[in-house]
Length: 109
Image (tube, rainbow, N blue to C red):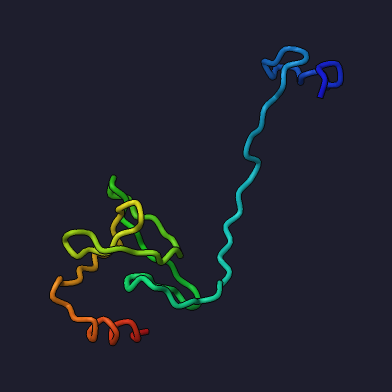
């Protein structure tokens, strides 16, 4: 838009005439609807059927909530998010756990 077409800035806005206002976030909205549960090739991925959230412990100790069930194992057998935050309370999978045991655990509800 040409400067000549810009509206005059609001009084007290700190903008000069013809200076663009930029953009800003007006609102956010959480979407908590149930998505389709699909089989994953990763053994540690989980899904929540119905209401609920996974609790995640952030590096600063705060607890946050997510429905993203994409988890990985760290070097100590702890379930973590992609960025390395821990599932809370900590879930530790012993390294000697067999695939058969994991198959049974995956069927728990």
